[in-house]
Amino acid sequence: MDLAELVVYHRGAFMPYREATLGLLTHALQYGTGCFEGIRAFWNDEAEQLYVFEPAAHYKRLRRSGNLLLMDLPLGEDELTEVTLELCRRNGFRGDVYIRPLLFKSEEFFGVRLDDVGHELSIVAFPNSKYLDTDDGLKLCVSSWRRVDDNATPARAKITGSYVNVALAKSEARMNGFDDAIVLSDDGHVSEASAANLFVLRDGVATTPDLSQNLLEGVTRALVSRYLRDEVGIPVESRSIDRTELYSADEILICGTGVGVAWVKSLDHRAIGTGQMGAVAKSLRVFYDDVTRARRTLPGIDARAVYPLASARIACTTGEVEFPGAVPAA
Ligand SMILES: Cc1ncc(COP(=O)(O)O)c(C=O)c1O
Image (tube, rainbow, N blue to C red):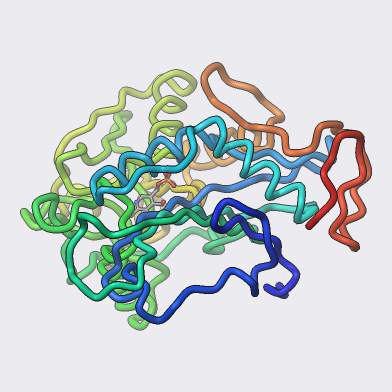
């Protein structure tokens, strides 16, 4: 990916990536005082269309995260969705895309506080299909790091600074030969994977850590709960989960915008279930792919088409979008 070719949204305008610059004293760079979202757009080959998945749900969470850090979003959720669609169009994407909105304390100011510090919104979108290779299952460990606590740096808000906690867990796992880590909250119960929520399937019941376990309230978590309950007919319990419940699971699923839906092959060198992809993981992955690529529609789930005419040809080599009503790339 050549970043110089990307068009981004910054200071209320579309501009080339390299023109969206920030000063060294930017508050968010110094102190981690930003909040962000990870949204994905999924390419559907048959429809020749790109779909942004659940944009309003992500912007709603960004608004709530921002509120915690005393920042307002400059636009409403619908307007932000429109900006996101336009950003994708201006980049002429024809493939899966990762979208990163960032609301951050942008003032070049050295005082450590949240009040009375100016903020801005930027959105960067870039081609990206996979965060982790999940087809063969994930080898996980339980991290020695604990999840940040709600009364310290709330995990419920997606705060840039608190992702140091995620990075500590992730790097420890990777450097010890695992794909990712499961992190426990400070009281020793299961919270989530480093950057994904988690479901444990055991004897026909699905459990997922309840919201008091310092986890991010995932958009994908809500979709997976709905799938398990409504489509597979498995009861879903949200409660505190002991570490040792994990080792005796029939299946463990992790889910998030980045990872999609993935199955756990082993945890701390112990096979989970048969050590092969389980029946629920198999069907869930098909469901997730169908819903995100809008092969299947569900009430209340928004997979928003980027291009006005699904059959339009898009000249992505030039970055221009050729269909009626489109605004040419800046
Ligand atoms: C810490 C953390 N937990 C869970 C998730 C999954 O959330 P979502 O499904 O909204 O992407 C993410 C990813 O955004 C995350 O960073």
